[in-house]
Length: 143
Image (cartoon, rainbow, N blue to C red; front, side):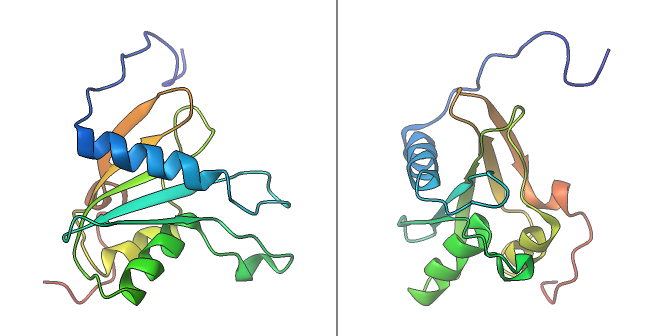
């Protein structure tokens, strides 16, 4: 039996603030530009100020020029002056919901190595994790 097989767990209960971030990530995912992979991603990042910063993936024919949703949301937050973050929600269509790529993990780790995350999809699946579980030894200057 594969690790994904077996009993389906009920979605965890989410706070109102978490649900708000999930809705923002799912909504911005609709704006993704993903003509090459067909894999639309939305991300919503809550800053310490309580504001939500969202982003979607923007692909490019020169794949290295592609911008992931997570880095797009982070760049927007930084451009608006935010440097401290409480929660990141990533919305994909996969089951289970997909985690961020390695590059995004490294970039997010620049700001908070233990960043809490919710990985979600439109079917209501939710996976709770933290950045330090996905990237246990980041290259960073944070002590």
